[in-house]
Image (cartoon, rainbow, N blue to C red; front, top):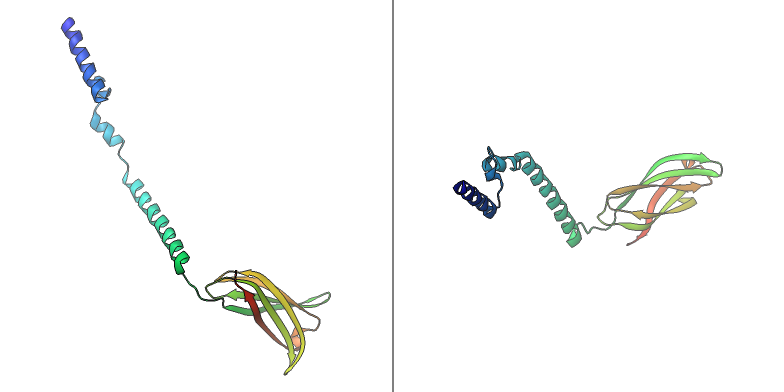
Length: 160
């Protein structure tokens, strides 16, 4: 009986030294525990895709910060419609910045002309026009712009 106790204590001491209690349990197998703790392949694939996305975004931000597209603003204007209002006429326009940098305080001027003679002018300011974006604005006139030649142009901007 004493020999049996001594054998049991030795086994228990060996188990505590190795840090594993599983050796004392009947039917446990350390190999099956390692297999159950293995990370499935699909988790590795998702992690790799996530890493590529994060690396791509960081690379793009670094590229833009260090000298991306430094072209000046290139503002193009188009007339969308003319609407009669209570006080006159509203010319709805779209301003598109096709350049590589932001334009602030874009001054847009519209002019009604009869031949070479200017009839009426209107101005508006677009506060902020980022690169490769569009903003809508309006110009007010007292006369019907459809009865004249309407010219719209960007008049100026500020750098942010």
